[in-house]
Structure formats: C-alpha cells, structure tokens
Amino acid sequence: MMIPRWKRWLSWIWPLTIRTCRPAIHTSLTLLLSKGRFQLCTPHAIYSFGDLYVNFARTFRALALERLPGKDVLVLGLGLGSVIEMLENEHGLGGDYTAVEVDEAIIDLAKTFTLDDLEVPVTIITADARDFLEVPSSRQFDLILLDIFQDVRIPDYFWTSKCLNRLAALLRPEGLLLDNRLYRSREDKVRTEAYLKDVFLPRFPHAAWMDVEGNRILIQDGSFLKNGPATSKQSRERRMGLNG
Image (cartoon, rainbow, N blue to C red; front, side, top):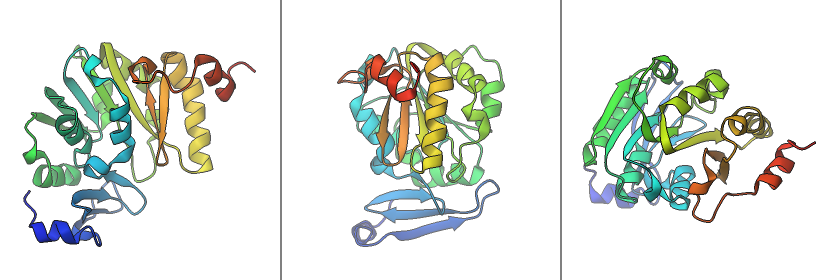
C-alpha cells in the first residue's frame, strides 16, 4: 500500500497509528508506521517491522542461504510478512512461499499493507499452525520459519517433541529450520534453555542459535552459519548441562 512521503518522513519523528483492531485471538493489534516501515504489535510484543524485525534480519545475514536446496519456504506465523519481505528484497530468495496464519485480522492487514508489494507468490493458509502440522503431507520445504506467538506467549504445543518431529518431516534434506523463541525474562530463558536441551538438541544435534534483541533463534543445522556454529559442541554441552 502506498503511503504519502510526508507520512513516512514524519514516522521517523514519532510512530503514526494506521489502524487498531481487536481480533478474536489477540487482546489487541496496532498497526503503526514507524521509521518508514509498517510495524504490527500487541501491547507487549512486535510481530512485524519490515527489515527492522531484527531477530530474523540479523539471523538471515549470518546464514549462507545460498546453500538451500531449493526455494520452497514455509512460514508459520505470518504477521505482516516481514520475513518474506527480507528474504525477497535483501537476499533475492524467490520461489514459492506458503504462510500459515490463524488470525484473519492479521491476514487482512498483511494483504492490505505489504503482500501486494511483493513479487514472490505467497499462498496463505488460514489455519492454526498446530492443525496444519498435524495433517499428514508428502510435501517438503527447503526453509521453514517457526514464528508463533500469542502476544508474549508461545502456545504449549510448539514446545513439544511431537511438533518438532512434524517440522522435521516437512523439511527437505539439506534444508533449514529456524525456530524463534523468547529469551528476555528469566522465565523465558529458563524455558527456552530447557527446550533447547531436552527437545531441540536431541532432535538436531548439530544445532546452533543466535541471541538477538530478547529472542533466541534456534538453527537446526549450525553449518549454515557463515562463521561456523555459534558455539562448539563441547561448550554447548557445558552451557546446557549435558555433561554433568
């Protein structure tokens, strides 16, 4: 959607409210124009912020995305489609995108304000990501992005081995899975560390991660990092308490 240039300039001084809504799943959603980008947020969390959605922006830049075996991308949790924007505009990742989003209000905002400006085809599936994962499918993807939040909460299913096994089944060999976790409060850190130790690393023993702006992005294959895995296997084990 086209925004007058003066509004984009003004948004660098203070955020401009474009729309607010009260969808069924979230307490409230606010669409802002901030620093020239659309920002979608709840009272406590940012869902999308264009190329300033820094947790994924910094992670993408650290990864050798050219190694992906193909260009079929699955996005679980659409927001305004910031991750798709960045992959197309900054990393030239064309191909076919499938986005799963349960909230029709978010889908409407994405279609109205961002997705029409993209060249890549985006198929939107209106469904709970849990239901989507539970349906047997032979299709596989080269890149899977898990970005599921309800305000500052990740639903319980997405902490389970069952969920991770379904994601692994959908991931093409030599593909890449990125899993966005909260890592801000002490409670966030304890739960994310436990998930990494008890669920993620047993399924993906060569995993790595990046800590960015109160989030931890889990990377199922640390060899995708341009500078090598974030930590060695031995130091990972010490940090996670895997060797006593």
